[in-house]
Length: 354
Image: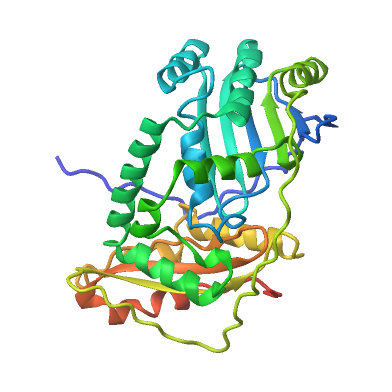
């Protein structure tokens, strides 16, 4: 029996009426030790999510080595003066909670989520990690070996090598040019180095605690004051970094990677930061560039050319500087017809000032 082809209406459905946006109620507070607190109520389910942000990351300590803040964040959750790594994991399972730590160029963070009824013990654990991380020697050696393997693997990836080279071109001597440490840098990491970074960055004057979920703000503020109130520590001194270069005109750079079967084509330039009036507009453009809605830039390529569909990573926007980039992987034998595609299928918003 022959199958019937599906029928589609040519008419575009009418848009529904615009619905009002109701922002959650927010409560702001500052503890005496300098910790900034932002609470947002959301009572749909009995859970809460939180982030303890620190306003410093890899860039602040780049003069000592590359990626130190990131490695410090990795080790933060591996043990404290009161709990070993296994105990931390068991306590998280008992509370039905999730917790992770991370760091970027300008921030470090401890993220967590759990049931509202267990908010206090979870916050106590976060407080312990922020103040009493012990950096166990065996965990440090394990994480350093794992990082070494990760770095070795990165250096075999055309995508990583292209991104690293673009960063160096755009940011020059600025710390944002440093994408990842080298093998020799990771091998030279010392436990004392991480502890020094930890003491410098993880302080209440440098921190913002943000909670969103099902709780009473005043009761939560009392719990936060009880948990974090006797924490002390100053904000790290601000540092000035070299200004990045200002490339003019179009330039082409080639990075030779012998034996690679894939070519990564990457186009990039400086972009605006969060303080620019077009920040929201470029954010919409970035979202549209990576959305699943069909558009010309996401159409399948010709199968005869054996070119993969483009991958777009449009926007890297740390606090002080930003860059816009557009990439596409390709079979190395089919690179020439691919080169124009990322540039030809997009246009940037108006007023792209830097």
